[in-house]
Image 1 (cartoon, helix red, strand yellow):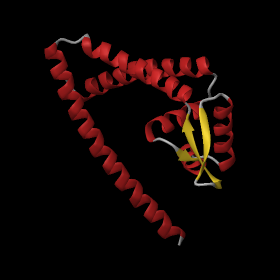
Image 2 (cartoon, rainbow, N blue to C red; image 1 turned 90 degrees about the horizontal axis):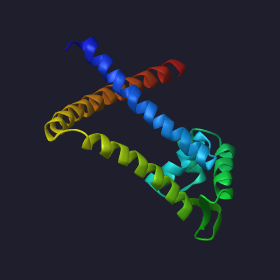
Image 3 (spheres, rainbow, N blue to C red; image 1 turned 45 degrees about the vertical axis):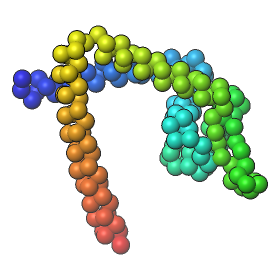
Length: 164
């Protein structure tokens, strides 16, 4: 197999996974009447845990008003709660409600079920081959990400030097 064939095959796999993932995402947003930023905040809270609105603002790369509005809408839907920290009214932690945690967990479980079904459709020999190949791809992707991070840092430094 040559590089072009492998690249084409990888692109095909990415398309299959993306199509499945995005289809599930769209169904999720429609089922619960959520926007993409709202879903991102729910999953962030699910994975990272309670955080302040300022952290959410940084996560969505938006304004404080936008983050507050997202949290407010999620709170109105009963998916998150805001709690004061040690009596300080200026600082409020945002947490998932049991309902918020439940809908995120359901979505997560759906994806895991699809992945388990896919893996289960492979023979033990195929599972070993795919596992080995995926480990190698993850390793190479990590190396590329590190190189890109170094390059981005160098470009930022050059930009700072030019602007100074």
